[in-house]
Image (cartoon, rainbow, N blue to C red; front, side, top):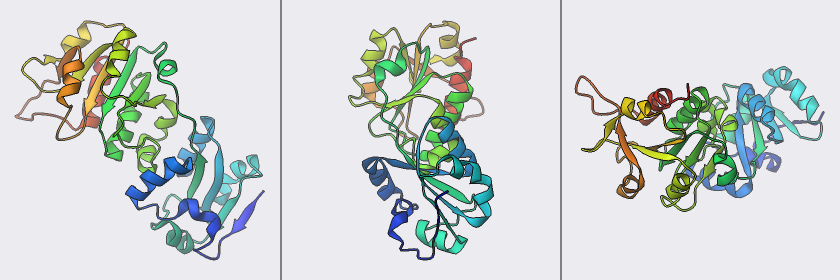
Length: 268
């Protein structure tokens, strides 16, 4: 074991965990430094089960017994243990889940490898809210979506909040950040995918009509809250699709809409 007792919140060895509440800083810093933060023992275990490698553990004494087997499994990985007060001074928030780990960020997957053999894909345009992003990944994992593609301006699926909300589904569903957006929708169409954008419009068909077509390969495109999908994306899609609403409600939260669409268009 490699247990290190923390007594100084300015200890340079735990710089991976500083300023975790500064979202803008962490969004820039974590990809640049090749790391992400896994929060809670359950998420940490799912990350390791997915083949990800910890670079350090960070926890209170109370949670050490729960992680003892992982600490023993990675004897060369330091485990930094301290009081709740010291850990809060370092991270900027109270660790009510008791444990964090700094993980090596996995290498990006290739688009061709991710879509090969896939039949249902979610494509996300400019979804910057980490809670929505995590919820969409969780629904994708639960409802048979084979892969998730995200536009260049989407939030980071490996940001701490997105991971937590997804309950680790971001480790389970293959994903790729696209680089040429929305032009790469044409790559999906060339691979045999029907591209359907979820949007309100005069030409939008009901979701159950799309589902009834039983397309062999289908890519469902969802846009950000408020503005929705850009016109350039709508122009490239094969279909525009809407979820019928009642009681004067015009739309659902994007995470809720994704779950409805994934369920309706699932492979039987």
